[in-house]
Image (cartoon, rainbow, N blue to C red; front, side):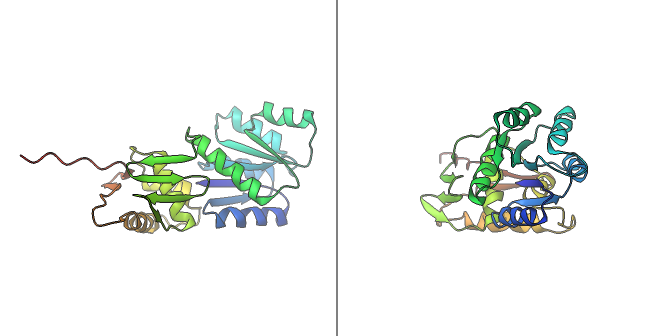
Length: 231
């Protein structure tokens, strides 16, 4: 999943970027409202973490403009103000969630994860495709009851495909949501990651593949097709 952090405090922005990256997210950062608005308008983000007090353009103005442009991305507002009027102003501007400074990084990560689930219309904390079970709170996956050992980035790739199970997901969409802007468009990073996850899901000698390649289109995660009965 791809997250944009718009925060003018260099120290806090660095801490947020590091925490989100360690959790496997692709993350971009902006230090003022104008840059943040440009990035938000130029890329497909799952969640934007937006500070209210920003130079050049304040957070509420950025949020209002994004909604005016038809951007439905989920937005988590950060603010030092905790009055009812401030919360109401943020929600009326189109915010999806609100976090008051100072806050624990664990809480921010939990709220970002919840907004990512909402971005795909999925509030359940468990996703199931055939014998694959994904716990989106624990960020763990099991196949046939056996734990699948995944890196943070591999887990997010698998969750993204599971959120869109049955749909063909292009390499470009995976790059946009799982990786950041530093990925070389000519690299095979997506193919390598999918290959690794596919191999790790092959638990047991009889495990049928769940991730399939659609040549020229992308990848799809779907339940195996039952073999035709023998005649």
